[in-house]
Image (cartoon, rainbow, N blue to C red):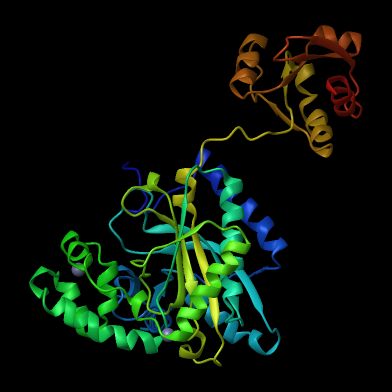
Length: 419
Ligand SMILES: [Zn+2]
Ligand SMILES: [Zn+2]
């Protein structure tokens, strides 16, 4: 029978990669706890309207990348393409804004985008999403960037760059819009079909078009950064001061815009050249109007997402330091009866113990133990049983000891011996 495979762009995360996933999660969770973040889980499936309204209907994500379908009742539902929209919805639904002055929230899980699968980019991918609600001070953004730098440094991924920019507020964007429409109108013939459509509806989107012609065309364009209003300019300057105080080595990239409409003022990306053309593995920014646009009170927000797959690509395979692992090799039916009592005692003492289900020759069991990277092997045969002992063999040094064959005392005796 033909084997059933995963859907295109969907994968199983196994082996070395899942270890990296867990390492990323573990380090991140440690800092989240230290920075007073609390975890929430939000649904993977939401009303389509949630994403259209928050992400913006002229964005690439909403226009072509969402897994949207009608459920059995005929309602349009979507697999979340990012986490912020759902977290904002949850924040409002739980009324957190009336309970906490500042809400610091994170969530971890899969996201879905119908993109062309490529290196480190899949249709199902995983993100760690972090959001802070209730603070418009640039100190909030600086704190997030500092936390990011601590997490990334600890994961030891080689060189990375933190790029920051300001995309201003609706007011400065309006001024800029006029300039940018005039600029691109003169170069209309060089824009792709999508960007032509965006030119009047949402010209800023042209900056994150991935088509070579559009990237080329926007190279000489004026920067939104240069049209910032006084308040946005001040915000950005204060942010830079804080980043200095935290010793976060951020560089300004005036070309940086994010592929979502809700960002205001601070936007940032953490990039690595090892990832190729699309080199960001962490991205985020401030969204001062999103909560209000989602029907809530006017509460500013700031956050970011870590692309777990992409960050994992940058990590070197690591020897995970682990507790010693034991293997039980037995010869004969009588010795086999010791599997259960030994297994129970070792697990009870927090020590791994493996064994072969079929007790073939001692030689083949030793080979098996070797293939499992066992540190120690307990050897039991008729002769040992008669003498009331069990042999403990150190697989590295090849030293051997004889220990009393008392399952309840063995784990301690074994640990004491190697200590
Ligand atoms: Zn502004
Ligand atoms: Zn384009």
